[in-house]
Image 1: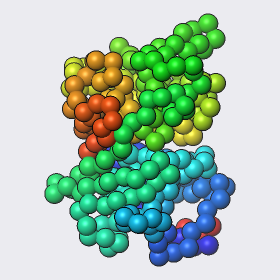
Image 2: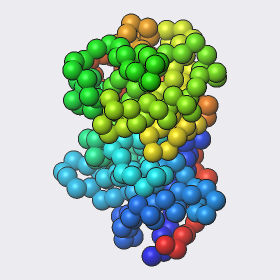
Image 3: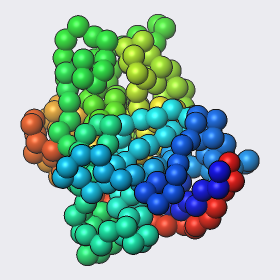
Length: 276
């Protein structure tokens, strides 16, 4: 099987994007891992498939595969790349796209400055919806890691996120705690782990250890989750600048039952073909 692809990134969170509208695509986990391998394949954090819509009212469908071969439901940085890909490949010239994912329906808005604004949907807080194996919803959860106690907030942005407040994100034990918390028994479907440093009520720094990937340069859904957790705890205002290792996103949220909006860039790196 020979596939045409485009390599893209959103703030360094990199993707292989494939047009599955005009070519037949049926990837197994081994093929995903081979393509994502940075030494033996193309290299990426996730693979994105652009598919024909499956329901009325949608322009496209969107599937996401992590570098380890697992399929996931949501990726904010990928959604922005999706919108740029559709425009650059001539699949649509619309400024507003409606896209169905396993996590629900997204709205993507291409801005005149080249950035993309994504309606990420309404966050979910109930433990069963995150999912999180705890008896009741709390603003802060206390989890045991051996003899250590970790305090964190949790929310679903279509994928599960835990968010820890840290004094200095540059010194945070992202690799050690991220790997332990990703697979903690409290998260039956694993979780993305965010480390948030609050600079002021409208500005945070963030690093994210993504499930099935490890730390990435940016995580769009992680940025949204961190802002939601910060607002829920009364620490942040409704419009927040999020500085990640790869660059800056802007996240807006008006509170419960309202969708989260994320705005940021998406870039094309190169195009190619791969034989699988």
